[in-house]
Length: 340
Image (cartoon, rainbow, N blue to C red; front, side, top):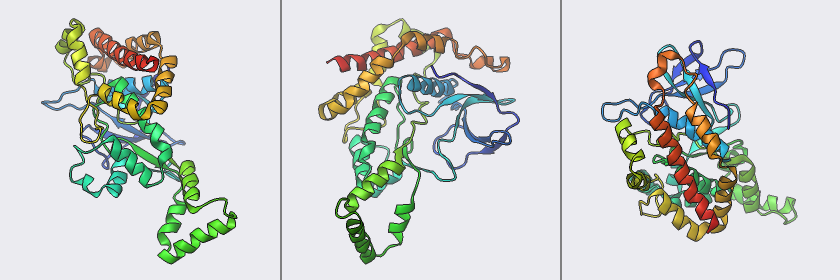
């Protein structure tokens, strides 16, 4: 299990993270000199009608479990200062030569009407169509892995700004933007001549994108693992197997199948009809890497070393039991799929 870090950021440089989606309090921190590395800090959502006090734990647990199971997930750890506690992750990009472009922009480029009704039309088909539109077919496997990971943690908030593409090099894009229509044609002809017909312009673009445009690590995974549940609700679910199963089946991802708003397991089932060859290895990898004892040990001890002043944020034994059981049930569903 990836080691959990507990970081005191009291002396770190802090600024408000203004350019972000979502409603949780977020800051940017910079580690002390000489490193000055950039980190993102998030607290739980605390509102009168939505008081998700333990939400930051969901982000951390989802991160560590994702790493254990081999998913490309941002690594979140505990961070605190004098009065606040939350989760923190290092920036996933190198600001000198990388950019993170969120999925929303790519979908709008392919489907302009998406910006009008983006909350209800974020579908698997639109994601794949948008990626193919910009020669990112190589990211399809990552999209499928994202759906599987969200099924394991019960994530209900994978909207179009909660996934993206990390771009390392925009040189070719910048060149093409500056060329007129006729110069682009000449550019394509030159590529053909230089490579003696061995590489078309489309192949050049494909190779360039495969090397420089990658699906981002999965971030903002905190709307998961029952973060919204009260202690009374958790106790009720633990004592009632039917209610527990109903809870699991009610959860729906923020990715639809065309216009159908399916639950996590229904989405997995329909994906298996068209993408079985790609999905089965993902399930098999989960099966091989899953270790319930490791997850139990990690979750049961996750809050042992937080400062005493934040004891009210410790997870109850019942909440820990619920999280372990929730994950175990979901993973076993996928393991059974790998055996069918």
